[in-house]
Image (cartoon, rainbow, N blue to C red; front, side, top):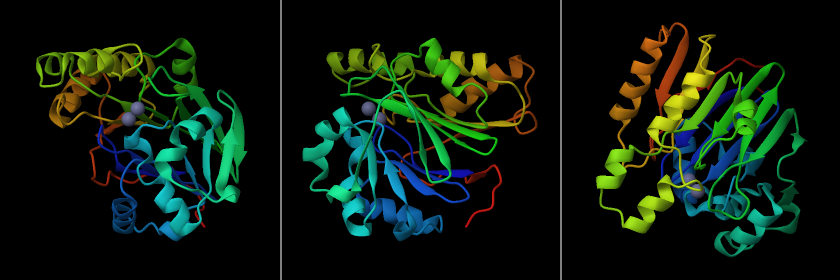
Length: 267
Ligand SMILES: [Zn+2]
Ligand SMILES: [Zn+2]
C-alpha cells in the first residue's frame, strides 16, 4: 500500500490510500476544488477514486465529500449515525453511492480489509480506520480526546501510523480560543495533545522501520517545529534513530505530505 496526506490539520483533513486494487480517500475536509487540485499535484486522478471513507461529520472531515461524490460518482462509506449527522451538510447523494458500515467491525472493500474503531470525540458516532492488505497495516488515528487500550491494541504494529498531535497544552490554554472551546479541545471528547501523542509513540515505537506521521495539528495552538522536536527528543532518549529505525514526518494543512510507499503491484 501507499499513502499520502493531501491535508492534515484542524482546518481540513484528507488522506489518499492506494493498494494493489483500490484507490480511496479517507475524509474530504477540503472544498472539492482544493481536494482535486491537491490530488492533481500528486498525480492522483479524481475520477479513479473508488470510494470515500468518512470518520465523522465534523466539517474539517466532510466539506468536499458530497461534491466529489456527485462530480465523480464516488461511493461514500460511513456508519449510520454519521450518515444522519452529515446528510444535510453534504447535500444529495445518489442512493447507489450510500454505503453504511457498522461501528467497531471489520469489513472488506475490494482488496482491502478495513477495521473501524470508535474514538472519544464529540461527534455522532466517530471512528478511525485501520487498513490491511497482504502483510501491510496502516492506521489513521485522529480526532479522539483520549486513547483506550482497545484503541492502542488496534493501532499496534502498524507499518504506517498517522497520529493526531493536535495542540500544545500550554499554547492552547494561553491562546485566543474561548474558555469553553479550550476545555472542549483538551477534554475526553476532544483532541490528542502533543504530550498524549508522545505517550502513545513511547508505548508503540518498535524501531522496526515503521513510519509515523503526526497530523491534525492546530495552526493556532501548535507548530510543526514543536511537534517534531518533542518527538525527536523522545525517540533519541529511547535510543531510536530517526531515518534508520523509524521514519518521522509531520503533515500540514492544505499541503501535500510525502508519499509513503510500503510496496505493492499498483494497477
Ligand atoms: Zn472532529
Ligand atoms: Zn478533525
